[in-house]
Image 1 (cartoon, rainbow, N blue to C red):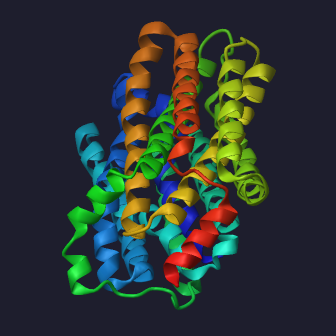
Image 2 (tube, rainbow, N blue to C red; image 1 turned 135 degrees about the horizontal axis):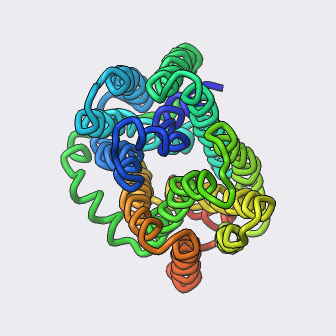
Amino acid sequence: MALACAGVATFGQLYSPQGILPEIATALHVSPDRSALLVSAATIGLAIGVLPWSWFADRVGRLQAMRFSLIAATVFGIAVVLCPTFTGILILRVLEGIALGGLPALALTYLQEEIHPAHTAAAAGTYVAGTSVGGLIGRIIAAPVTAWLGWRWGVGLVVVLAALASTGFILLTPKARGFQRAAASERGSLARIIWTNLRTPALLVLFGQGFLLMGGFVTIYNYLAFRLQDAPFNLSTTATSLLFLAYLAGTWSSRQAGRAAGTHGRLRVLLVAIAVMILGSLLTLIPSIPFVLAGLVTLTIGFFGAHSIASGWTAARATIGRAQATSLYNLFYYLGSSIVGWLGGYVFTGLGWDATALTVAGLAVVAAVWAAVAAGTGTRAPRRDAVRQRAVRQ
């Protein structure tokens, strides 16, 4: 329940502008690709923040660091709503993203330390399901309030809810029992630990999954509202905000993927999830609302299933510096969101929706091929991973 509250607080704030980008573009007199920078600024800030947060958490503990993270993010979220200029808002969104980085950087490490190894895949899936609910709540609430009172009120209400959720996280979290403060010698070798993780092929392929798949996923959600508010669809802001109900499919699939990995192995489930994501992006090419909606739901099912496997697998596979390994995954994950999500705007404005959807499908194909080719670098079934982990501990 505590991590569910943290997911609402973090991802509600992070993505609340995404569903109202057309209104923000109109209110602040900027183009669609520039308005999308409000999402990219926060996610790139989060990418910048994950490694420093992992360093900080090694000293003060995972829970304490996550609490600091949520409090700081709420303060910056309030400042975003009050800032009058687009440039100032972008700067504050970067700072808000840096503050928010504490939770995704540490949550999976926290679970890995507190949950029995036999249940970590399912636990990671449950956590990812919670983050999807948070992202959904932020988008769904911001859009109708924006249509009624303006975008600042819409985003501001999400910040208030995030503050309440952060309070719930602080009050509900049980005392950590698995955290062990890093020794002085280990604390001084952060660069060595990061470099070791970056040179580990089995981890690098998982980092690549986060970059490519998240980049494609955010691209679809960033620009689909622009497409559906134009001819021939001509949907309203409130109607397009309902698209984010597709996130409920991700809430379900992330949990199911974690369970399926225990039976079929993580690699097989990852490849199936990516294939589902490709199918979803291709369905959005059909100029029909039912097919677009079906494609969006299918894409969301595939993405959250793949993300659940890749993120949880990263924590399980790290032999040293588990917090740094999961932070690196989040670094690449949110770099993909920031860079690919922003560049996708140029594809959309220059070449249209068909090129955008095909680009997303192409990124997913690259991710799948990379994962399949890298299977020989040690991507094994979870049971073998657990045996190896027990041997290392012994």
